[in-house]
Image (cartoon, rainbow, N blue to C red):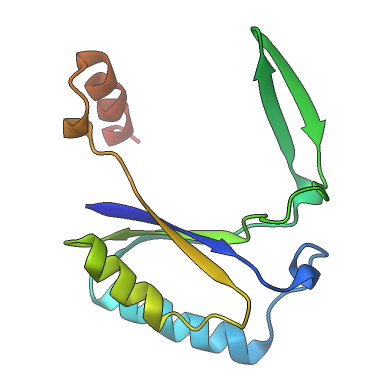
Length: 132
């Protein structure tokens, strides 16, 4: 099973574009290497501040684009991992070892697999990913 691990930074300076300290980056690099060595890590990345992004909302068939920053949101995503693990408990175990700073939150969300859908259309959509 796969989990998306969503990082919510605890420091508002992250939204201003401040990068982590060298010490934090080293610790995170060591953690990421342990994930990779264990065969858990599929993907990961940090996200630039919301001022570099946009939101597209939908209402009655109309798409409305709002450019960042998204000051009104208290829970902006700062980054993510995709982990392949045997169970939710294993994902939680890894998350508890992450070198996060005070105030940061990790949210673990299981990712749907093709077999979770009865629809052949959904399964065909997943097959498109196999070609990339």
